[in-house]
Length: 95
Length: 154
Length: 85
Image 1 (cartoon, rainbow over the protein chains, first blue to last red):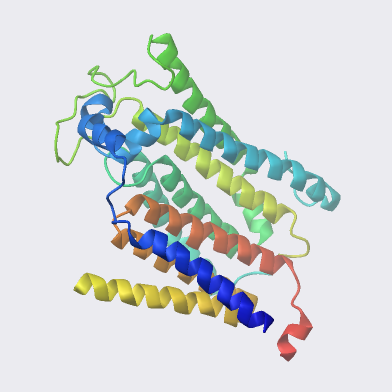
Image 2 (image 1 turned 180 degrees about the vertical axis):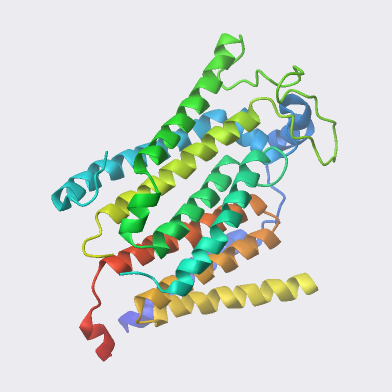
């Protein structure tokens, strides 16, 4: 009985999510003013032919800076945690 | 534990091609699909192939952890310095201070669908290379640090 | 039409490889199945015209994550009770 209820809840949630998504058309976002501007002006303003890179490194440079910071922080954290473990082993000099 | 001879030979054969593909993605980031992050991940995969296939002693001899860490720091510094020079040039932070100047990476690009020229894009190729260096260093360092705490003869 | 057939095959392959990750008792086989899953997913991204995401998925999903799993499997010992089932 409990298992049936679980599957029923899963089916209802999945069905409602699918219903929400079924009405949307693929590739046609509701708000596209910014997309149109970038596609129209990206090449002359940034000089790059790949619009995705133009957006990532020029229009949205702060996002990329945040991503780089996240990666650097991850390396810092892993180095801090694993250096103490490696020191116990004395196998790998982690400088 | 060592992987079998087949795995080691295959990894050694594949590595140069994966490296060339990764550097191609980074350098042509402003023309073809991909960019700094994707290219750096592909280059890191080439290192990871070696790390998975060989024993820890071989890795310690061949790949220097300090070099990879310096690569990562250099990439991040290059990224931030390129963004800061825009402030000195009198435009916004992360502004494109090289585009359409005629100097390095400054050739004006033709509008519309065209194959493109490597010498365009302003600061975008520089930032691609910077992010590529950062990502390749970061991911290789993560895997090497995980390898360093593996106990036994892994 | 051809496009739809290829997409259908890839989706069936995705389901199969995802099931294999759950099915295999051997951890190395499960890790390789995960690599196959990531590769098929990157093919699907490529067909849906997102080559950037496809490259990132192929490099990180099929390369780095599988490598981390294999390192972890090499670092641990095999559970003798897992073979009994």
